[in-house]
Image 1 (spheres, rainbow, N blue to C red):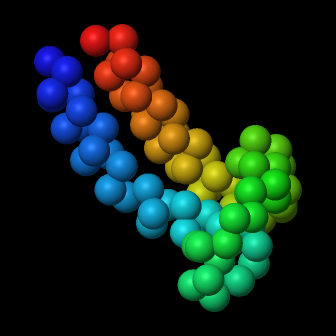
Image 2 (cartoon, rainbow, N blue to C red):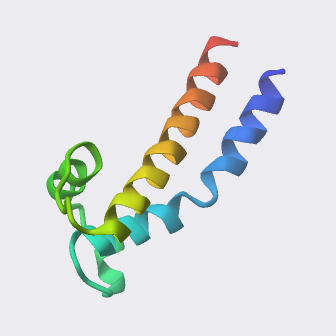
Length: 83
């Protein structure tokens, strides 16, 4: 069972770069690829847990998708640690 959960955890982790890159580009309002390697966390965390752009529908939709993705990732990680 632990091997199955580990496999799910690894598979679920594959799209993390895509989601994080898309979210960071929207939050920092840039299309530059270098945003993916810069350790800028404060504004990203404020945007994830707060409401940085309340009138931006694209931001609100992406934030919700990213939150759900991260929640499932967290649940898989907790399940793996509990087994």
